[in-house]
Image (cartoon, one colour):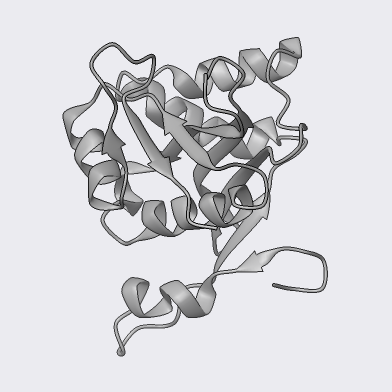
Length: 173
């Protein structure tokens, strides 16, 4: 953690991102509150091209005041590679849950050309680290088969069929 509170992921991801014969890529995870819509524009555009509308919804909900990522335990994080935003992910309180202290993982997206490099896994781990002091359980919604498999590989369980969520994870204290 740097002196300004930002997590520097360069050591953690450097071996995944840069073979020994190439220059090390600088990776950094930063809080995106307030969001920079200029920086998020390329992710919003790329996600729309893939048929995903959740980053469009993120912008609309934030600007309308519906979801501000400013409650206890809430955050919106961005992963930057050499100063370019390549991934985003959020965490909010889940008020619709019957389980107290439930958080919701939301709006996780990694640019297509940056996938399969451990970036999503590292982003999710950082969201979970920040969630632990505030939440006992994390839930999320996803409908994509590949995305569901990703969450299951990193420790999320499928929710019951009648649940409002697709996956959940009990956080260790």
